[in-house]
Every structure is written in C-alpha cells, then in structure tokens.
Image (tube, rainbow over all chains, first blue to last red; front, top):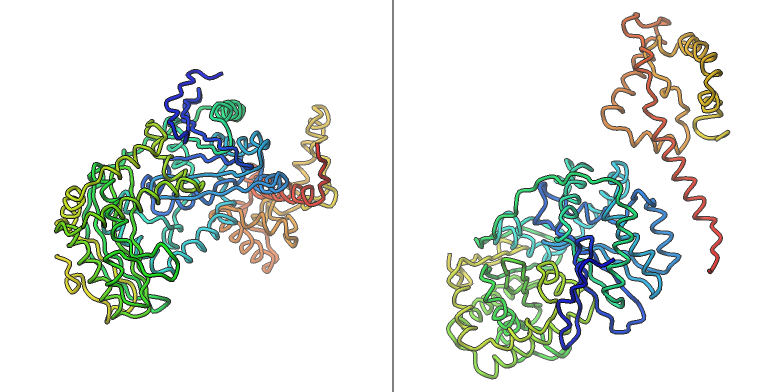
Length: 434
Length: 127
C-alpha cells in the first residue's frame, strides 16, 4: 500500500515520524501512549492564500459541513455518538482541521476528515444559514478585544498583503463571498497533495497513512481541475503606525518590529523571552528588566509570531490608564534599544535562552502547540523534530542577540494604539523613530 | 409524502411506465393549460402551499434572481385578478418556462427534516 515508507526521522526524542502516503499527503504521527488520539489535517488555506478578503475564515467555518457522504447533521450526531470532538482553527498560513477521539475510533474520524478533503459540497444555503452567522459572531468577538485587534492591525501594517490579510471576515467582506470562492480556495489547497500535512497523536504514522489512503480513494469521484493561483509573493516588512479610537474595554498598545531573515529566528525567540515581563510565578514580579518599567495596572506580554518567511516580534500592553500605557510603551522601546546596544548580561541571556527553550518545548506537549510547531516543518518536508529549534536557541550568543535586536531597531517600527487617542502617545513620543 | 409539502402524486409511477405516460401526457398538458395559472403568468411551483415551515425554509434558499422573479409573478397575477382579466397572450407562461424551481429545494428540506427525525429517535446499539 505504501509506495514509499520513507521514515525520514526518528529523532532520539521521538517526536514524530514522517511518511509520504501514496496519496501524496505528508503524514507524521507520534504515539506516546495517550488514552486519546487526535488527527489534524493542515492545509495551506490560511488568510495569506485567500483571493478575496474573508474567504479563509469562511472556509474554516465550513469545515465538517455536508459532504458527498454525510450531511452536516450526520457528522455532528455521529461524532457525538463516538464521543469525539471536531474543530477547525485558522492561522495566517494554515487551516487546521482536527478530530480528537478515543483510541479505536480512528477509522470513522479519518473518514470524516478525508471526505471533507475529497468531496465537500459547499452548498449555498449552508453558507447563509450556518456558516456566515458563525463567521460574523467570531469576527465581532475578535473586534471587541483590543489586543486581538491590535495584532490584526500590526500584521496589516507590517506585511500589507499576504501575511497582512486579516484572519477575520468583517461584515463588509462577507457580502460578496460566494460558495464558488470557498470551493476555489479549498481546491487550490487540496489540489497539490504535497501541501497537505496530516498530523496524528496517539496513532502510528503507518496506520494513519493507510487509513487516509483508503478513505480518500473511497471518496474520490472525479478529478476536478485545480484553479490556478497566483503564487504568494515573498513577504517584505514595511512597518508603520496607527492609532484607533475605541471607547470600549481596556486600551491596548502594540510596539513591535518585523524581520524577514529566517536565520535570526532563534535569536528572536531568545529576544522575545528576554523582553517578556510576565512573571514565572503567579502574583510575583518578574526579574526581567522590562518588568520594572511596566507600571501597575498595565498587563504586558511579548509576542513572537514566526511565519514561513517572516517574523513579527513585539510587546502588547493592555490597561485602563493611558498614562500607564505611555510609560510602559516607553519602557518597551527602551528595552529594545538596550538589547540592540548590547546591554544584555550573561545571566540575563542564559535566563532568556532557558525560558525560550522551555516555552518551545512545553508548547509541543499540548496538541495545538504540536501542530503549530511541527506542522510547518512537515509541510516543508523537514524532519519533524524539535531538537533543531532547541539547538538553535541554545546557540544564541549575546553578540548575535544584540546584532539581531540592532537590525530590528534600525528598521521601521510597527506601532498600534487602540483606545483614547487623545491620551495615548504617538510613535515618536515613546522614542520610536519615524 | 402523502402529507408532505408537495402533496400526493402518482407522477413517478406514471412516468415509469411508457404506455401510461404516452396516454396521460397529452391529458396532463391539456389540464395544465386549462387550469389557468399559466394565463396569469404563474408557474406551477408558485401554486405550492407556502404556509408551512419546510416550504418557507426552501423559499429562503432561492437565488436572489429566482426570489425576485417569483415576487414579480405574484404581483402581476394579483393585478390580473383585481382586473378580472387574463394577461395578454404574449405574457402567458410557455410550457418550457414552467420549470419546478422550488421543488428541489423543498425536497432537500424534507430530506433534512427526515434525517433529523431519524437522528433524534435513533436507537444506539453497542457493537
């Protein structure tokens, strides 16, 4: 059955084995003896690849709706009878469809996922009756959260098109989304099998590949032509600043920078951990340098968002008081400049490296983190192992950290302020150039 | 389907038999023309009883164009009814135009309702 049972990597930590199924999909799985299993299908159908605004978000809500084999109601009721959970989540690059279930039920849940890949219906009435209401409520919820909105705006300013596309479909965008647009995005993502990754936990890669092959071949009815897509252009970092008035909820400020140098990603991991003012123990205060500069009442956390060809790093500050946010934002800019000036001590570097490594390693323990960290690697055909990432972070020196931070600070910053625009600072008032 | 939205019908049986459909088709065509709805510009699916939830749901699934045309036909037919007149012959519905635009949607809704009923009353057996 398996054309090439190419076991690329069984690293000594045993994170995942990668198998190329004869369907062309890349299959990776790890079995640590958990009582439950999960299977995630990763498609290149994130908001980066959409041709109309909001199509990716709509497609992610179309997951597990009716297919040629079973209706949406049938999928829900059967999954309930098996006691499984079906979910879909969207990132800027990938759409992840996940089924979690008890061991032994893999045949049914793999069939559900395969039928969505091979024979979805995308009916017009499901779009208007079930999908768009869910899309609107998700977009509305996201628009009410200042930090989420700030990160959306930060992506839009930093990367403009491509990675800058919003994850959420606003109500203006959904007006002209048709079922055909969604079918196109799905067909483009599934049409090239090497851009589909199947990740399993609690199941062996060989049996997962075998199940998928039989399920997909059972669903395959006819070869549909894959609509040609413009290749996503390489991302460039632009930066910029904006201030948005909002009268509701806490105010938010984002100060960050972008980088398109892939070689600097390990150092950015360390830098984000170095900047992170969140304490390791609840109610305690962190020893990180930035933590002392953040006034009480302002909640700050560092954000590192690595994508396949760009990275966004920054700090999100959230608080009720505009004066506190101004002070905190000044401290963040100061911390970036200190790091660029080589003012990171040996102990601080060791702490940042340890923290970054732990965050990466602990993130993989949870299923979402496992998919987020290893999925892109599997899609690229690399070994699905964490060791290279951890080794990379371990190799960060004070010089490389300050050099990477220096490059960031020299580029145009991305600055977002959401809240009371009369009181929140402008970019130059907190020490950002341009 | 005796009490379904489309009412009882012997049409599938008649259509399945070649002799029967050859005999009955001219009578059916004559009946459709004589019943008069085509003379006020309606099509057959406009006569479907819409005061029931499944047909209402099917009506929401029409394309905007179909919904607009349906509303237009109703307005024109009401005006003809007010005037106690048929439309001019050029505006009568041709037999080719008399397509079942609503029936597929109604059947789909009925199928969904039946499936829901099945799932609601299912007897689960552990294998």
